[in-house]
Image (tube, rainbow, N blue to C red):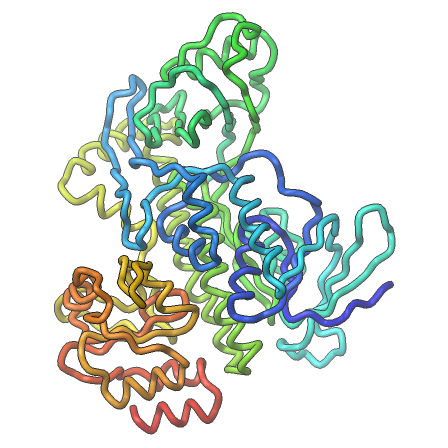
Length: 537
C-alpha cells in the first residue's frame, strides 16, 4: 500500500457540491484533494434549476458571470389541472433578494465544467479522477480523538493496489449511495415519499408551447412536469411504470401522446429528425434524511445527507447550501484552532432546514401530483382555493429557504416589532465601491462583516476587530437605501454577518451594542480574542 502525505481536507465526489466545497475552502486558504471515480464530467443532464441564493454562492466562487451566460431565467411555476387549465401561479422575480433571478434553468454538465475550470485555476485544489474510494478509517491509533486524522483508502483505475491519504477532515459528497455515510454509521430517516418517474430530456427546433416557466400537471392518473431548460432544450417528467418503454415505434407513439399538449410530432419517428431525445431515465423520487451528518471530522453533504423529490427544484440547491454553511466553519477550525464545537453547528443548522424543504417538496408531490387516493382531487381543489388568497404564493416561495433556527450562531430574540433578521440572509444590492458599481459581496469579501446605519460603538469595533471583519456604514454604499430600509424594517441599527451572509447577531435600534457575544465568542475566537470581546461586551 502506498502512503501519500497528509492533506487538510479530502473531498469524495467531484459533482457540483464537492467541487464547490473545494473552491469555497480555497477562498479561505485551505488545501484540498477531490477524489472522483469518473475521469470526466458526467455527460447527461440531471439538475436543471437553481435559485438566487445558489447564484450568490456561485458568485462567491467566481463563476457567476460565466454561469449567467449559459443560464436561462424562468418566470416561475404554474400548477395546471389535467386539461391544462391554470390552478395557480408562483411567479419568480428576475431580481431576487440575493441580487439574481429567483429561478435559473441550466444544463448541469455545463455548470460542472465551469466549476472544474475554476478548480484548475486554484493552486489550493487538486482533482484526482479515475479514483475509487474503498474505505474510511477514523481513530486508527485507538485514542478515540474525534479531531484525529482520517485515513482514506482508494484505488486508481486499472490498479488493484490500495493507496491512502491522511486527512484532517473528509467531506462526503458522494451521492445517494454514499460510502461516507456507511463509514460513519448513518441510517436514513424515511420521510414517506417514493414514486417512480421517467425523466426525458429533449433538444428540438420544433415550436413548443411554453410560457418560459415550469408547469406542473396536477392529475391523479398522469401527473407531469414540463420546463424549458435552454434555447432548444426541454425537460418532461412523467410518472410511469418502470416497464413502460418509450423506445421503438410503439414507444414513439406513446411519447408522442405524452408530449402532445406541448409539441406536435409526426406519427413516424423517422420523420422527427428535429426532435432529439438526449436522455430518458427512470428515477425513484424519494424523501430521506440522514439521521447523523458527521462523526468527528467526517461530514455528509448533498445527496449523501438528504434526498429531496424534485417538485420544488431544491435538490442541488440544498447540497450547495450545505457546502456554503460548512466550509467557512471548517476553515476557521483548521486554520485558527477555534473551538471544535463550531463544527457541530453544521448539522444543527442545516438538518432542520433540509427537513423543512423536503417536507415542502413532499407536500407538493402528494397534494398536487402524487397520490391516487380519493382525497387527491380534494387536496388539489383546496390548493387552488388557498393559493388565490393574496400573498399566499409569495409566502410559499419564501418558504423554500426559511430562516435558520436559533442556535449559538443565530441569536434570535423574541420579536417585539418589525422583522427578525437573525438567521436570515442579508440582501445583496448593487453598490458603489472605489468608483465602480459592484455587488455587495464583492465589497464584504470572505470574512465576517458589520453593517451599520449608525456610527460604530467601541463594542462594535471590538467585535469587528476580533473577527477580522470590516465595518461598513450603509450610507457609504450608494445602494438606493436598500440596506438602510432592510435594517429599519428589522428594527436594527447594525448587524453582524457571517461569512455565508447569514445575520448572526443584531444591534437593536437605540441599544448601541451587540448583546449576545458571550454565546458565540467561545466558538469563534482564540482564547485571547474571546477575552478581548468579553471585556467590552
